[in-house]
Image (cartoon, rainbow over all chains, first blue to last red; front, top):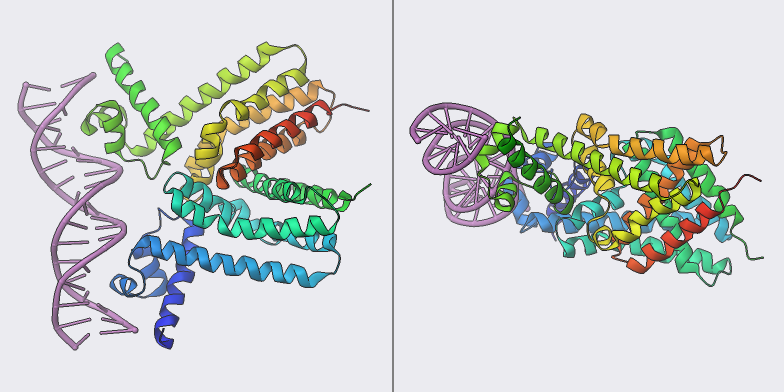
Length: 190
Length: 190
DNA sequence: GTCTATAAATAGATAGAC
DNA sequence: GTCTATCTATTTATAGAC
């Protein structure tokens, strides 16, 4: 837990986070992480016993990022509908990366589904946090099926991501995201 | 093009097709394909110069499967709405594999997006065929924005797939697919 | 804590006998 | 067309000096 050590550890995690996103977990080697950080491969094993442990640290790092983003959305407004709209901005604000590499959470979950059930389960924790947050917003809007709405919204965003990435179609992403915002605005009890 | 050769070639392609789906392209080795087919690794290079060529053959094989499925949907009814409903059955009919491994086309495209732009583009050809077919159905329903509807439906199915696979949530897949069928039934010009 | 050297396993790919 | 043996490069991981 020394200061210097934590610094190097965090640099490894952040480089791995980016590489796992842009190249995929299985296609990222220790050499890649070493090249990006300048830290020799052998040193990695002082902080992580296995590559899986690096992945778990990356998953934790992404979870922190998600929680931070949700806090920013919470700070936007007292109105849950406004907070939901703020959340959807994540697609628009990252559209260039989304079209090129997909969703960091969705593509990792899809990759690990073919690899290791336990690692996939860990990677889905960030989705669970978002799902819980979305559910809270829909509940505040008065919906009794708030969890279903949360899943619907997550699925909608993942669908937009997968198809805009497959077809490299940014206009589709922009149109679909705008339509999703309309949908959010229509979420009202009659 | 000899009969025996084509037989072995097709066995390699079909084993690779299944392995690329359940383990991913990068995580499937020649040894895996050899173990599944009983054909020695060295023989692979008589039919395919590189692993990429096997992938291209798998992509072609999947495209044939898609075209065959769309022909079955065409045969269902003269009513384009009925044909669209028949198409959505693909999720329900494969729900066990979908929850475990995702969509063969979507997960491959997502994997190759991080690997090789050219291979990804090839893998998306099957999506393009489906998109064109869906567009045709919506056009017959009288929609001028038929291509947008086609993309919306593809995205919706991919979103259902990614999230039901992430959460291993078959009830969500079933509910979402039922709601998509309602949506299809509501696709009418006013 | 940091780094070099290297082990052990596996990958894709090749050469050549049959 | 089929198969065995092998090459070369790369991978995760370890040992041990500093």
